[in-house]
Length: 413
Ligand code: HEC
Ligand code: HEC
Ligand code: HEC
Ligand code: HEC
Ligand code: HEC
Ligand code: HEC
Ligand code: HEC
Ligand code: HEC
Image (cartoon, rainbow, N blue to C red; front, side, top):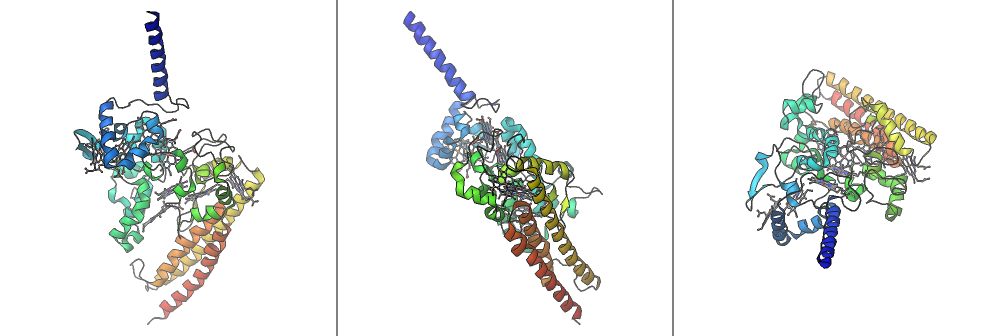
């Protein structure tokens, strides 16, 4: 009897430990797991078959925190409210092939909510095809109606998307802007753009290479600017010193001795709270022809400032930010000079209404869209080469070209 009591106790303790390990995990309960899929047998079916049919999926799933915490295939792939049109029958199980943020929301509601109001969601999708995929309610909810209640930019597709055509746009604009894609359940966005499946890691999302999938090139070279900045140089030389895997919300300068993109724009570090709204720490809106200060600009900048304070003194941060403001103002002045030349020419009726019809249209476009944005990115994130050689210098050159192209058009009979 003593023996069976003993065995019973050991078994019970073992079971308790396993339950703890499964539900709470090694680092303590930071995420609620309300609806772990009850049908364990069905999930075993998915794993066994997919191990053969698509071993890459199962391998990366096994490497994930999700699998170690008992999150199973159907916890993400089971349809939730509003997903009837996405649901299909797969091996006699109701399935969504492409889980949306709505499927993540049952366990990660705060991240989903912050992400939804960020520029990475509906706004990113709107930027390419305009109001085409939006209902009026969605436009209102996502602040995509102007003061007159009309869709921003008249709801039109972006002129460059029109210029390059639907097929090229599908393989370029829409690949990057799919970070905010419209899903069939009405939600916007794709979490897997930063948390690649099926590992869904924070470590990977914190690396600048992840953001560099999209934040690069002639019109928004944040990745190139970072690489040439002191921060980027520090990261490149000391990658192995970074504790990329530290639990979110607990980061200190011990984990991150220098910042990556995520540190400044998203992470909780020191006393600063983390966020999935990448606009939350931005004073400026740097993408338009003329850069403008955001509605909450001052408050936002104070948040960015407190990130810097982890590693720098206030006077040096104030100095860097003031200098950046001066350069941004200079890019604006140059764009306005170019605008004046164009407006003047338009007054003569020489330009017509078609977008991108003359060389001068491209010169003006690049003056703000490429050169202006490049100088601004360089100015705010420590990229001297982008402030000058790819930025202000190119703008000065473009202004001379604009004048000469305008004179040529005016001289035409
Ligand atoms: C008997 C084998 C088998 C079982 C069991 C199975 N699958 Fe599949 N699954 C496949 C195959 C094969 C494909 C490849 C696509 C196709 O040919 O339909 C696939 C495709 C998929 C896709 C992609 C569908 C698409 O349209 O892109 C998802 C997601 C998926 N399976 C998830 C699951 C989940 C979750 C389970 C468990 C509920 C499961 N599968 C069970 C064999 C299986
Ligand atoms: C944490 C949520 C989550 C879990 C857990 C999960 N998946 Fe997925 N799965 C996704 C997402 C998100 C996608 C991509 C949707 C898209 O393409 O937009 C996906 C895509 C897939 C695909 C299509 C892959 C492709 O490239 O065509 C298959 C197959 C699949 N999952 C099978 C499984 C199987 C089998 C399991 C369990 C071993 C599983 N998933 C567990 C979220 C999950
Ligand atoms: C059934 C609940 C559940 C669902 C659904 C779910 N997750 Fe998770 N997720 C968890 C748990 C539990 C953890 C581990 C938390 C911990 O250990 O602190 C986690 C951790 C994560 C992490 C952090 C991993 C790391 O490296 O620390 C990411 C990123 C993540 N999930 C993304 C997603 C995405 C994206 C989706 C939807 C496609 C999703 N999750 C769906 C429960 C879920
Ligand atoms: C799949 C492409 C993609 C990835 C990956 C990506 N972004 Fe973005 N990001 C975009 C697009 C597109 C926009 C522009 C959205 C818009 O139209 O306003 C954007 C905008 C931003 C903005 C400006 C937001 C605003 O309110 O104006 C910041 C800051 C940003 N991203 C930071 C990051 C960081 C940090 C990472 C990596 C952790 C990252 N992004 C990864 C595509 C991406
Ligand atoms: C390599 C990825 C990538 C491609 C391809 C791409 N974009 Fe973007 N786009 C971005 C990123 C990242 C941003 C944010 C830049 C920033 O905030 O500085 C952005 C910003 C924008 C903005 C400004 C949004 C705003 O809110 O101010 C518009 C408009 C835009 N893109 C339209 C397009 C169109 C149209 C195409 C195709 C002709 C395209 N993009 C191709 C990544 C991309
Ligand atoms: C622009 C890239 C990007 C996108 C898109 C993104 N994330 Fe994240 N996510 C991150 C980064 C970076 C971190 C780490 C933040 C930190 O260091 O504090 C993170 C952390 C997380 C964590 C861990 C938080 C914790 O407390 O442990 C979860 C869960 C998560 N993301 C879920 C999501 C979900 C769900 C979505 C889609 C709605 C999403 N993420 C979209 C970049 C992204
Ligand atoms: C040292 C901190 C820091 C790092 C590291 C950093 N940024 Fe920034 N970023 C800033 C600051 C500061 C601004 C300008 C903020 C403002 O508006 O006042 C900015 C602006 C931006 C913008 C412009 C948003 C707009 O208005 O259009 C984007 C996009 C962006 N960063 C993306 C990135 C990406 C991607 C990386 C990594 C390759 C990165 N950042 C690295 C601090 C940083
Ligand atoms: C996690 C720590 C960390 C954060 C956060 C951080 N930096 Fe840095 N920063 C460094 C390190 C490390 C260096 C390189 C050390 C050096 O040059 O003395 C550096 C260098 C710099 C330099 C170059 C200094 C020089 O003398 O050449 C500037 C400018 C700068 N940072 C500005 C900022 C701004 C602005 C922010 C906030 C938007 C910021 N940093 C956020 C760690 C950080």
